[in-house]
Length: 252
Image (cartoon, rainbow, N blue to C red; front, side, top):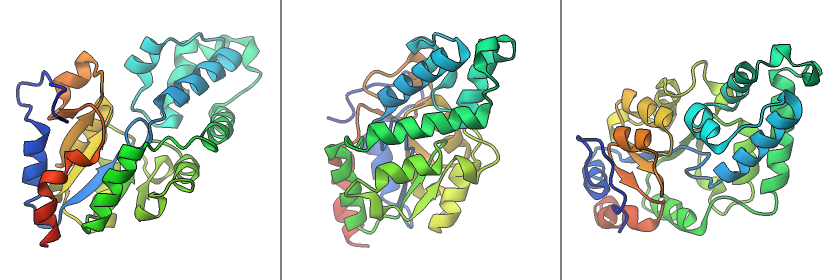
């Protein structure tokens, strides 16, 4: 069952109840976070950032560092935070690398790694296909760069099903600010209260909630902080998340 992961938030509800309520809204729509949610690529990103920061900043980033300080932020914010943490301005080995050049290195490496192994998993593909078949508007709201999103979607069977993508370049304030989510809702033509968001990070959850949207955290091994914030929690994305509301969606 997709409700097997239990959040510690005292106000949390079972995910199937959240989806049931969402299914009764005027125009149900879905927004997916990208990295670590729609695209199962957090291990790829951790590998890239670890290598990048070690080589260019002299910082041996750990998994805990990444999860507690960087996860859920935009790519630009991650690099900026890494520069601060590493004290890069005092490290002679940086060779003048600035944020934009580090982001360019990260982008090239990411595209290489996802080219032959698409990170959108089969269970997630089926979920997206089911939603699209039932006329549910779909969007991606992410702190990732648009080129990253395009690189993954171009090689996925669900790539053409996303008409709305709000990426890092499209906002002035990243998650947990609700700006990206509100922009996504506006482009979908849906009220925020009609939308359920799937997210895997604390900043993402906070941003979706601040936008007035329903939100479900996606994590097989949630951190204490994620579990404490999550309004509902599922271990992974799959079709059974929404199957119980499909008949009502079909009648719309």
